[in-house]
Length: 366
Image (cartoon, rainbow, N blue to C red; front, side, top):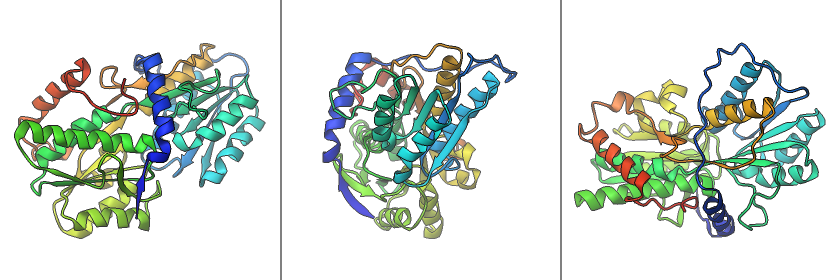
């Protein structure tokens, strides 16, 4: 477990904020009604996808990207190439490997592939690049570095705000906790929204629920996006401090958190991220209060399908509550455990976030 700061990332944060001011929030990709029979693609179109660390079966971020990719291939009736990265040293070689296979579109899954994607896009201006969760602004001028890169990013602080409010409502210990994989903006944005949601609950209810693991600048990080001892240590440290709701942010590290919760013998609710983890990993379904969702699969699918039909658009897509690019999963097995008033309150808060009367601060907020 490490305590880290995100000061070294502020240049990218400022650049991302400038980008949002320029492009605004696009419309959410709409799910296709295709029956998968294949509508064909332009001649020579060959999409490829490169994962972040954690692989395709992380039941979270990478898996959602791959799901959208596979659905697009099925709809278009074509083949593609997928390459999994085990470590960060794999990023550049993996991108080059798909370029060597004559891929005409390269999708990189995750913030930490941005540097390798920027270099490859500059060297291959005729190849379409899609960056999931990063605008690819390595020179920090507020713009995507190359005109052949399409960013797909998500203001998950908005959905995490709802999860923080729900967690504060649920907590009996008056302590909730969060930890991340690494202190990337795409990780801490969840933690920011979560903290703000708890604070909003306290303001509205006159309560004193504490947030452990993130103070808005420094926090607890496992330095990994895969389950293992570092994630276990991070989760255990928060559980030992008495939290009864736990938000792990980063790929498969929720699996370590779930193990710690089960071993504790206490009633501690788990929060999922990216996917509706209740559906993607039923093994932890009984622990899940809810999940903070990014609709990565839909964004990837629609981007690939559009490009396959000759309509690649490099304009950034920014998922929000308003365009339904982010959202909160159902309470599932916790439906009977939460306050009967909670969903109505969350609906009102959602409306307030959308109309601006309830501000949510993030590096993607205008």
